[in-house]
Length: 515
Image 1 (tube, rainbow, N blue to C red):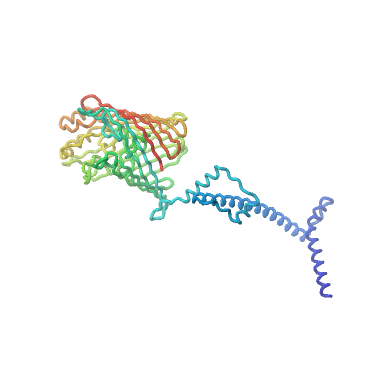
Image 2: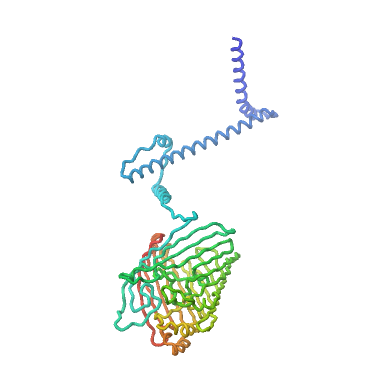
């Protein structure tokens, strides 16, 4: 009995102490309202600090509980809808949600809009797709353009799928033609590699089907695969190094056309374009006015067409045992919405022909792109030089030389000695985010008097056009980011060394799917 009494007294005293400790802050606070505060003892200060900390913990715990209930409700709703979609896809009746999910959603069911649900389904389907995987385990991106072109051509042209020059009408030939093609479809791969010496590495590869036509039934519609681009790029903050089969950096602009994808638009009328093995370095300088760029590179000058389908012979540039050299300086505005740039470039291409004849090919180029109105952009290029046939810009002969020895000893060096000049310009008008108009015109030619004089000793040069003009206008409509529709009309006018100009026209429709 005495032990029980002592235990009850201890409990009673402990309870009274707890009540006093709990009520002490309240009493102290009420005391401060009624009378002037007295000096706070250390015990009261500790009690006050503990009380404040307890109140903050209670508030945070309440907020956490609320967030947990909302998350549980949302997760339960998603699980029920996902189960319903999976069973519906298998043709089975939807199974009831698990008991745990129902318990989680009993407090506060979430509300999903139709747009949110469609976005969620798209994200889930994207994660379910099988991704392209490389052997190195680094990211690999597959892209491409499935492009259908239909043409209606009046007159005679050198290439029905993508004409670069008008040619004289042969006796008995038709006055025009109608055709279609998918040879300008493009397939691409882009790989993202590791960081090397602080530089990001990227490599890309592009193929199309414009490498020729097989000698078989229906071969006119069956294009042979062709390598377009194959390049590797290292990017530092202000420096880039690139190498491979690439577009010429000294001619960065090209007209916009989905009727001319296998080669850039106006490639035979003022646009230097030829893709060739090269290596280049780019240095960027960030200033208040914009970004200044200095570029320099070396090219494999494949100046002459390869006449053998299975063997490769050295071009005059390769026979010189020197690459072609090029430099470019440009000023660029930072914004991407309304880009603006202007650049100048120089080209030097040493060449060696048969019997030891040497020629120093050269060229200078000016390019520009800038907005002139809120929805209008002007771009273009001008070049002059000689020995630049390997980079396009002017129409080449549509006839193959019958005597190859005569060609490499007489025709090729005489043609390289004739100066060239070309230019093109384009006006782009963006109607809205989905549609745009493009009007472009170009000119590329050689010195007519020099060409005429050289053709007296070499009849083959009479088939080389002295001048070539091209004009096109198109409308491009993109109802979605992956769909392209375009209508285009182009007019060609080609001047031979002697005789009147030859004209041809082509109207085309294009439909493409970007993936």
